[in-house]
Image (cartoon, one colour):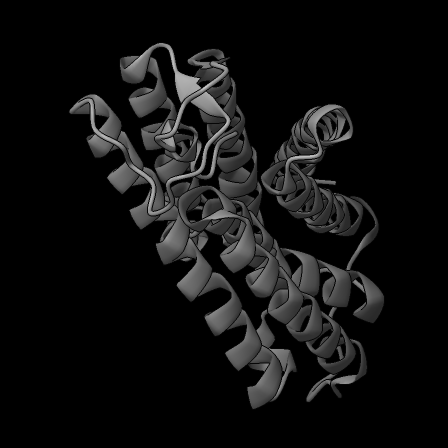
Length: 258
């Protein structure tokens, strides 16, 4: 294993471990509070663990059809969509969130079937970083483009909108129901900006690929992106406290961070 391969493997391992901690934290919050956005984030982080774990395995052991399908499905198709579901819950409330979740479950099942059974156009080289353009036909690639692009815009726009609204002392959500309120609006705004930055970093692997190589670019963006997301989540969580009768949905300023 070359030094570059060792670095890519270490970065993928680090991303997997951070995402595991993130997943356990959000899952613990869901068990204690049963908030649907926490469950959405737990699913998203579990998918992140699968994607980063597949990259970690491939960097150390070589790529296979199964490894690439897991990496592609969890990382490129499903992960960002489940992250965005948390934003939908926090901005638009339970009714819209539950409807979106039902649709997402159906689409996730469809996407899983498509990626699992899609024929590969050429044999996979275990020592070269694979790309969907070279291996898959049109349908899996469309699923990846839609599954990553649209939800990423929801996350970024939602986080920025919430941050601006909170910084101005205004209600950021599109719903009037809330259970929690911001105790430190500035910290909450910073946390949301970090969430948006994390989503942007995770989508920057293509830009870095020309300079770092595809495998290292994905490893770098995975590791840095999940750390920034986790940091934003922790900052925003510490900026929120319970208030018994809050009618304005300041909790939605956590979008998608609480």
